[in-house]
Every structure is written in structure tokens, then in C-alpha cells.
Length: 301
Image 1 (cartoon, rainbow, N blue to C red):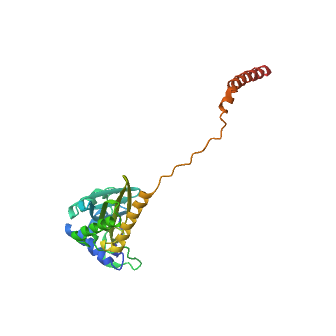
Image 2 (tube, rainbow, N blue to C red):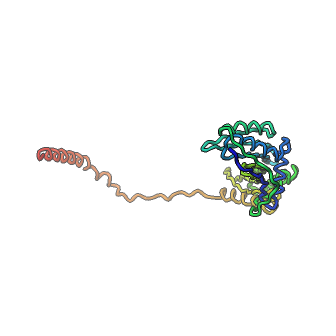
Image 3 (cartoon, rainbow, N blue to C red):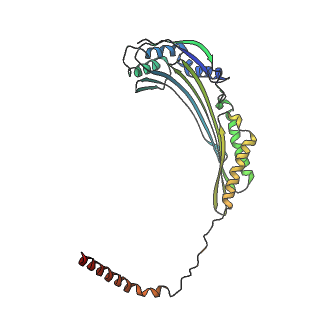
């Protein structure tokens, strides 16, 4: 089975798409010694079997989180997840393979494992034509790594600022918990239809939790926000607004009063229940009437 040559195009997702594609190549391909011709060769090898479609999916994700409580940073974490996935489609059948390590050997093994879903005897040569910019695409997120947009000292200073402002707002604030989290996600997809696309998805968030106490009663207030950008999004004005909102929420809950439903006064006369003494007689009468009705129905039939 012969198929026409497919040109693998570098689809740039925005005016900054070239930066996204360069970042994806640097993080996902270069460390494993993989180049664009290797992707072409892998997809072509998969099409030695008769497949209807195939693609390669690379992903690199970095996460971090910082937590402050009682004036000190009590926890912090950092993790890196990455891998490559291969998909092959033949008719109604789909095969998947995945590897945590990104290098030529694992890529070739995953491709061989999935191509067997189709019968042997296919042929499809995929050729890289060159970089191409999609004019209709638009920028969604900037390609910068949010985790490196602030130093460790600056991140701790941001959390400490949250605690100081919350405690200064009202003396009834007895505990402040602040959290800072960031994620940097890079994706690269190579498809057998000739498309090579990269996407970068940053994500950051700040969370504020305060506890207010008065006369032995405690209430909680929370606030926060974030977006697909870097830590520069957390300006002093924006963070102060979230702190003030968390404090306000806690104090409103603290000052709230419980509502008691009004008591409904009974209008039943005191001698009402004593007047129900006729009920036993009524039940006997009803029983007798029911038996007579059955006898009459039996006779009439």
C-alpha cells in the first residue's frame, strides 16, 4: 500500500509560537538526543504497517508549591513529570504506548509496540518541509516559565506579606495560612498528517485562609486567585484585595447570629383530647358496618 508523501510542518500557534516550539524542542527533544528528522523516521517506520493515523505526544511538566503557617514556611515541594506517548489507529482499533524516559530507544520501542495493530505491508514517507507559521493562530499564553519568574526569597516574602497584612487588619485574626503554587506545562505533538505543534501552558495561584476567634468561637475566611501567567500577576494591590476579602469573610461569619425559629403557640382547646373519648366506639361501629357490607355483597352475588 503506497501513500503520498506527507510534509511535517512546524505549526506555530502564535506570534510567539516560534519561542514555544523552540522551548518544546529544548525541553523535550534535545536532552534525549532527538531531532525533527527522528520524528519523521519514527512515524514513517510506524507506517510500514497499514495504519489510518498515528501521532507522537511529548509532555514536560514542572510543579511547585509553598505553604506558610504560623509565620513560617512549613512545607514546600517541587516535582518534574515527563514522558512520550505514541498512538496508532487502524480501522476501529487504537493502540497506545507510553514511556517515562524520552530518548530514541524508548521512542522506537513505543512505535513498534503500537504499529502492530495494523497489518504489515504499508508505506508512508513523512518528509519535513520546513518551519511554517499558521497565520490564523492566536496567542493564548506567554511561553515564560512561571516558576523562575520569582526567586525563592521573593516567594517567601510574598507569603510573609500576606500573613502580616491579615493579622494587622483585625486583632481577632489568630491564624493565617497562605499558599503559593505554580506549574509549567510544555507539550509537543507530531502527527502523521504533517503537523508539528507546540503548546506552553503556565499556571499560578495564591490562596489565603484566615481564622478569626472571639469569645471561644472560631470562624474561617478564604480567598485567592490565579491564572495562566507567571508570578508577576500577583501585584501588591491584587494580593491585598484577596487578604482583605478573606479577613472580611471570617469576621462576617464570626459576627453572624444564629436564627431561632419563632415558637408557634397552640390554639387547641385544653379539653380537645378529652372529647376524643368517642373514638373507640366509632372504630367498633366502622368494623360492624364493614362486615355488614361484605355480607350484603355476598348475598347479592
